[in-house]
Image (tube, rainbow, N blue to C red; front, top):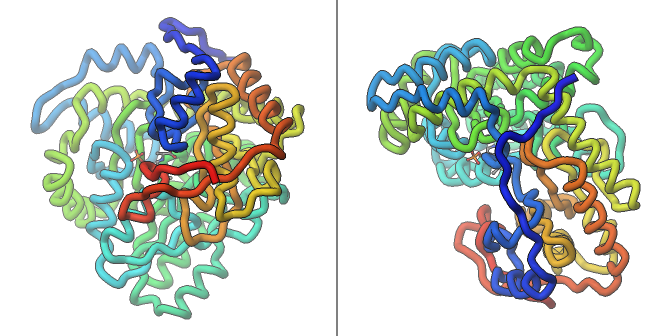
Length: 446
Ligand code: F0G
């Protein structure tokens, strides 16, 4: 058994109810606008918010800050090659930097990109190239209560329908996001990855895996896919990622780091094209927007992320939070995914119509009630797509403990007790790019 003990602590405080009320109003009912000091338990994201290990902190000291040829980059390359199996690494400051580099290289005006489900920054980067992001989730992904081991899978049926409709020539890129963040963090089976790789090859598209949470995905595979029950997390990760032509990675998730990302590939000409774009947008290709010490922390983090004891502790934390919520009859998306518990806001507030953003109303109530910050991933974050009204409680890695989760569950239960009196929200102002609306729009009570 492996556990963690804290060797550094940070004080957190729960502001008074009146202060929370004022903070929410000041934030325009958008929790992205809150000061972090006003948040008690911060489940906004699992991205870059985790706790680094003592080994990672030790590695920081070794950071080689050379502009070109940094030895820290060499150590990052070695880690990516050992853990993920790809020889060419093009670094970026974080995942979306890598998305800009890769999709800017592969996509152009009028193209179509397929994905099991595009995450918001992925959708925005595809659209930014003048291409059309099309989701191909399996139907059960949108059903918060349905059973299924791999509800994150890519629907081949959907994929072929789009091919029929627009023609293979217009689809240069097929993406698989593992785990499927926008579909409640659900895992993807290796079998599905194999079939998507074949599909991409048949239509002559580059097959990209968005590997942000590859280790969590691999852990689920060892639990649920018969072929891999005896396999190590490392072996599954290597096998699954091995089907891709390229990876796009945010080191802020399963890199266990606060910042960083990269594109990885075994295709030298794709790597070269990406390097040119990284020079333009990120930095020289041996740092790409990361400091040397960031690269060191990421290199160590990647290796820690595939240790079975680490990732099993991680997945079990998410299950603990879900169990505490379910014990209090809070409706959660099941089965729980890899990095977050998703609450079903439709079931919490059946009296609120979709146009009044029940998910965002729930996010605001969780903050108002207990200083808990989650994020809406429903009709507010994804305008014009048909998806369930989910609220994500993302758990930073190696950071919170059971007592924190009990507070979160008690908070959600208290909100549900007064659910009938909760009112909806309407948008007061929003930015121009619709894909990025939920980051900065302001709302008001209806
Ligand atoms: N792809 C996926 C599947 C993601 O979840 C994210 C980020 C990115 C790409 C972009 O990476 O943040 O390093 O630029 N997801 C975070 C989240 C922000 O909260 O889910 P990034």
